[in-house]
Image (cartoon, rainbow, N blue to C red; front, side, top):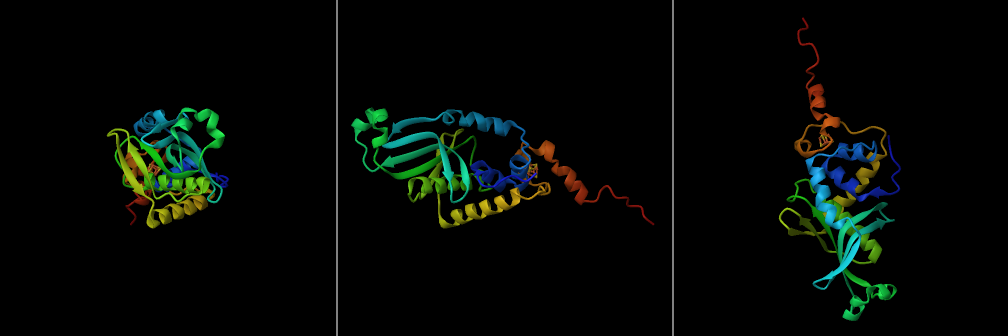
Length: 223
Ligand code: SF4
């Protein structure tokens, strides 16, 4: 079943770069199954899923910040966005609630995405972070050169630079995702390394399509 593509969720881009069939099953057919990876991922996000605000080392930390881009037709939520304002005197920090309509403009911002494990090989996390940056650039009217992936298991942060190559990859993936998700037919299952960690393996059955391609069900004793 195709879906309206006016506004795509940011997570769909991550799913698409991991596996286009996975993106289709989740976002067009609304199929979702948890496995150990998705459940651990949920745990990793618990700390940042509640909207919040604090100051640390000169940065304002905005947790669970809603994101959108009218230009790209994207929406979602950032785990954490770190921002700096043009000028932010300590008196305003102490009195944040009363000053909320009187804040100086944001001059620097960087998205931070929480991930449960080490960096993955499919560029999906990098592209998702880049798409968050594209939303923030539109929202704040800023250029955002880089963001961070926080690996919960090691408590280390990896910097991701939003260079031309990553921006181009992200925009191309978005365009391909949009056309694929409005397609009435799901992409075929294909057994590949990503299937090992995929929570949809039990419903997708990539082994079955591999068998079909191998034509194992055809008689071989014609004379
Ligand atoms: S099991 Fe493999 S082919 Fe199927 S959705 Fe997951 S990654 Fe894609």
